[in-house]
Length: 470
Image 1 (spheres, rainbow, N blue to C red):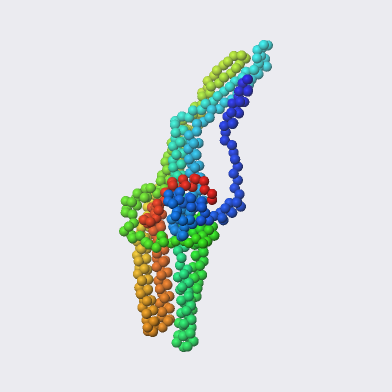
Image 2: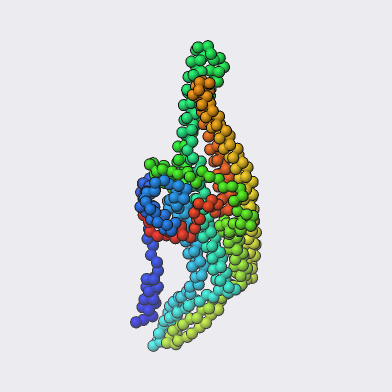
């Protein structure tokens, strides 16, 4: 076997060990069909929820979908988690790239001496090998930088988990049903308007009273239409937050029990607990990991001032004589010493430091703002709740007087209308207080209510890694 055959065989063996490319095209029509066919009661959703929560589900589908169940369904369906997971896997794969050592290069040479003496081979064959050696610890620095970037990607994955939960809670809260109360107001005002119209015809009511009654009825009718429009939009937003089409919520009973009770201000986390939560927020830690990666990038550019070395052993068969050689090469840093990339890396480190400070300051401001607003929101709700109780007492008194014949039906209808308005005011105050509580949870990146399940990002993402048919 000659030398050319050996080179050819070695080349074939090296190529055989290479990875192959497999195309994976995306079919938009099939993707759209799959998205439109998503349903909450899918058995795959049940399997995921049990794995992600670590709890057995007694009955499937559940009788009512509460905040916890909708959040877990969103973790299964929402594409933001798939994207965050893919970004994390890419960052982890980059650590393999960072740790790869440069491959040696090989070559062959052939020369023919046209003036070779008779009886002497005119051919000179040679083999060369160039082995690079990195200096100044560049490989270790690259690995460190890639690990920090992978850590940041994992933290952003946890941040994506929380953001999905936050959007589900906010969408569920604004979808709190109020149409029945608004419809009741419209119906009561219709009765009031007819009563005043009959009184006007009989001469017992003035034109301004009738006009005012009709204007109030028009406003009530418009309020009902607006409430129905908002209800349809809020339902669509809730479906989008979960990651399913609007039709997936058809027939599903939604529970709003998580918003019925407000936490007293005294039960909020103390200052030390809030400070600890700020130090463990995923976005804050991710920004810190980005800064450390920028530090490693600067260290790498500084190390690049020192040239790498290439060792080049060679073999030559020259006219029947075997000759060995050894070469050494390196880049001579005469024209530049990597000054430009070093300055750029320093600027990016300063940028990463400023980004970390901005994220940290934003987190502190969010906590302070949410705490300041929640106390007043609770007071507003307590006031609205007290006013509703007073109005209910007034309505009962007017109803009793109507039964006794002391007041007319118009007074009773008016009292019922005011009670419905007070109930709406209470719901609005409750919604505002729950929104303030949600902002505080977002600032701390954890649920505060005792009955809400703790979100474990690692468990959720490991559950998504298992094969589940979507």
